[in-house]
Amino acid sequence: MEKKHTGKFEIEDVKQWSLLLLPYKFALDELKTKMNIMAEETMYMNDSNPIEHIKTRIKKVNSIQAKLERKNIAPTMRNAKDYIFDIAGMRIVCSFITDIYDIYARLSNRKDIKIIEVKDYIKSPKSNGYQSLHIIVQVPVTLSHGVEQVYAEIQLRTLAMDFWAGLEHKIYYKYDKKIPGNLERELLKAAQTAKLMDEKMMGIREEVRSLS
Ligand code: 0O2
Image 1 (tube, rainbow, N blue to C red):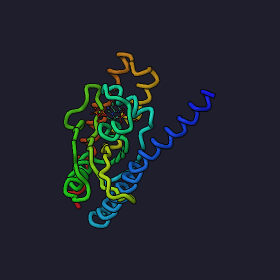
Image 2 (image 1 turned 135 degrees about the vertical axis):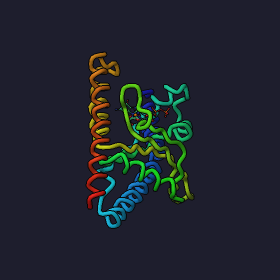
Image 3 (image 1 turned 30 degrees about the horizontal axis):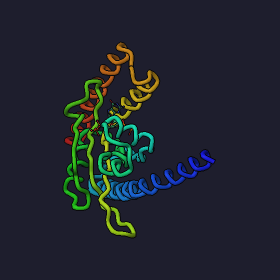
Image 4 (image 1 turned 90 degrees about the vertical axis):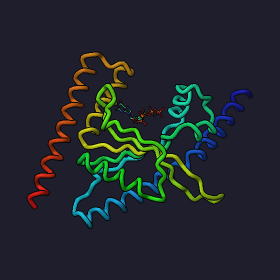
């Protein structure tokens, strides 16, 4: 009898969380369209695409709850909405660092996207070497009951930064979040190499541009 009740409660719970997550999916759909229009327009005007690829994800319910608990906040749906700003996540990968800041400047000038917070891990990389530009935005989403302002996190990084972050992420989980010291040092060196590579590639592009 008790088991049946628990089961029913869980289904209701899952339904409620799915409902909560729906506007975040719509916010990502809106953002994706806006970014694709921006990239296509740039292609026509400058003959180069600032975006290599875009990935989106909705944070899993257990990750949302774990993040709230890490912040010492009760893992409720209300708190998820009020305190977790990266439920909707978009990762934009560019070839060059200048493209990242161009996209950021364009986002800042838009009336339909509100910039809430910026963390520049390119100018100030994390101690492990992690680099990316993180922007928390609010996007209006029109629903049947009206317009909802939905938070999303946009991460902008180069191909080299993305390559590094992808490997570091795998190693981090392989070693259960405790990367051995020698690998940490190797990763830091790799991050510095990625930074040099990004600077070199940018220099080459500028040289080619100045010749044409
Ligand atoms: P997932 O699965 O990628 O979403 P805050 O909200 O400020 O209290 P938060 O969210 O940790 O704290 O802030 P921050 O620094 O903006 O980092 C959030 C996301 O950036 C992470 O999301 C990662 O995607 C990425 N990130 C940050 N630091 C690192 C790092 O050292 N290595 C790698 N590979 N990625 C990093 P999640 O939620 O951890 O995971």
